[in-house]
Length: 440
Image 1 (cartoon, rainbow, N blue to C red):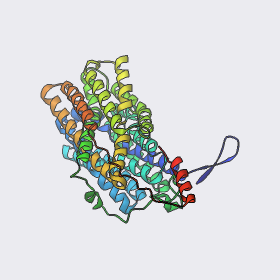
Image 2 (cartoon, rainbow, N blue to C red):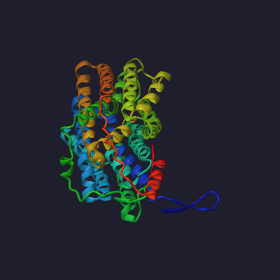
Image 3 (cartoon, rainbow, N blue to C red):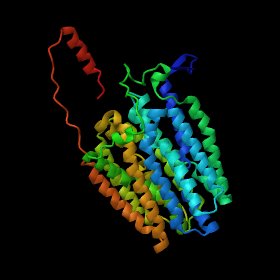
């Protein structure tokens, strides 16, 4: 516990879990700042080096795919080597990759720096890291915390975009150099505050009345062993999340700014709209976490994907040289829906796979990024071949409707009948009290 002074001078205790969650949020924001900058670099790199849009998008695609592929192994590595060590190492890897990008002169160097190094570092600190923090440090409010940390991911990805857009207009190398500085500033914070488990500092998880079972020592190979590749539920959930990645990271992060620029909109204005998405996303994702603690996550996913389909279908008619009220309204609605799918997906992973849920979620995140990487590459190729991004928005809307239908088919776990054995009166009374105080 950490003791702080209250408004009347009284001493209040704040559980260490909240400080760990706060530090994790800052780490995630620092890593997230690198995830969307590739969209700002498309035009400057095209103009300076003459690289085709498809070539630049290839590096962004590698980044997105590795962002997903790293996730399940990152969680298992945190099991093996520790959350604090891995988070710090990931931030240093991001700094190295962004630093290399400032010195590049050939496309393969962009793929190596931005695609391989930054993608791997960001993947280790993706939503699976948020799921692990929520799962280990919180017995209560897991959905809320998972939603808040997921919101931190997108806040970092979008909220700083206007600043980076100004830097890119001045010098794109200054923008990537700033990302290096951000990662290097956050790394010491990760080392100082993060701890692997509450038991490491003599505490129980927040809201727990007794220690939770601790998994035996694990290795990175656990990520492969727990992959439920024979489970139909896994493939249904992975399919919905692949579509989630295609309709957010793949098309919005990489191609919204250049698509808006094609319609005469300045890059700074387009980046400001993405920033609106990022800021509103905080409310949407935290609200989704709150709803996940109370409603069926399958129904939530269906509703989110249907609403996202409608918004994407309308977007081509809203793009223009300026940010009209209808386009701002789109940014607000899309921000509420953007990463709202993550808390219910995390909840379903825990419901279906128990303590292996965070690692299974990592594998499902692989599908998310494969979908994102596919659309990121397809978007660049489509722009080179047709001169427009318009077909992508319609395709993304249709994919979201498909995801809504798939979410309804995710099965529930049958509950085994409970056999009540004869017990002493005192034991029966205690059981009754426990039932009365059980969370709904």
